[in-house]
Picture 1: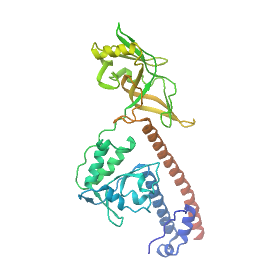
Picture 2 (picture 1 turned 90 degrees about the horizontal axis):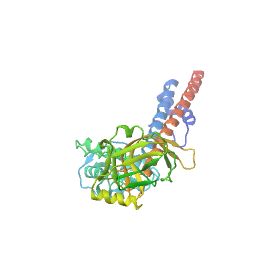
Picture 3 (picture 1 turned 60 degrees about the vertical axis):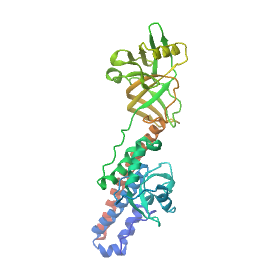
Picture 4 (picture 1 turned 180 degrees about the vertical axis):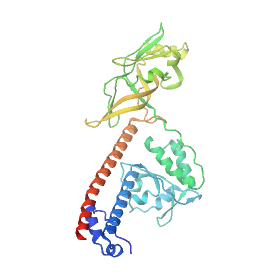
Amino acid sequence: MPLPGPKNDEDYDDWMERCLADDLMNKEYPDNKQRFAICQNIWNEKEEEDMNINNELRGAIGIHHTPLSDKAWDGPTNIARLRNDETAPYYKKMFAWVDPDGDPDVKSSYKFPHHEVSSDGTIGAANIKSCQSSIAVLNGSRGGADIPDSDRKGVYNHVAAHLRDGDIEPAELKSDNPKEIRSYNFELRANRETPEIVGYSAVFDELSEDLGGFREKVRKGAFSETIKGDDVRALFNHDPNYVLGRTTNETLFLEEDDRGLKIKIIPPDTQWARDLLFSVARGDISQMSFAFETLVDEWNEEEVIPIRTLVKTKLYDVSIVTYPAYPQTNVGIRSPEDIYRTHITERQKISNEEKLSEEKLRQKIRQSYYKMKINLIK
């Protein structure tokens, strides 16, 4: 006969009292201290399982190991065979990703199916072709993966582990690109006689518009290190085929002043550059943006809309742009929405860890209490 287990709506105190008084537990473990230890271990295992499920249901689902199948893959058929009245632990056996904002007890909240399902809804072996197809999608096939960039590695690890279980080396995951782009409408001037282009690619301590759940500002000093040593380019529309200047070649000069990141470009004597210079001089093109990687940032959650402050960055390029739109749909560029989702996910993980630490402390206090009761009984 199986040992008792905690009920879903049962707290630690109720469970320990029920477990210590259980007839089967008293029969199997007549020693009070041993019975207490067993009851405690059962509760700890449940806590760990609940925490693992909670963590997994926040994007990429954790690795598990199952048999592997080389049958032809029919995704829609296998998904249709899934039972509709199940809960998260059932569905996470089938998929590699779950929407953190969706209902984990509904199969439509999941993506990257890769297990074969029998006619009665039993989830079986991982399918080789589906795992390989999932990696291809992560690398941009069929329009790419419609999931946050921060979850790509976790999904890859999940399906790649299945392939390795069958001694199949998975294709590599194309490296995550940490590059972000921000655009501003600040003064940009061109002198056709010199010729040179001067302006500001960013300003300090001015809040941006709503970027999709948060606003942003740049702290003075955010570029101080990168402009000293990094090889930064000046481009047109962030296109590497149109290089206007380069710091190492002394055709691009970058400087932090009290206002922001000041730039001076000495463009090449080419027809396209002369045309661009003319367009800037008469005001047809008047905006700039910069491509960067965030090395250090800070978040202020106390405002109505959270504020992100860029503290330290690595510059890739500064660009004169025709349209300063944020490239949410561009492959390889992190969108503001993904940055905010990553921040929320990391914050939730820290919150879960803090809650777990607090619960462990409360359990130690309760353990001391129950041990005192056991000693009094003896």
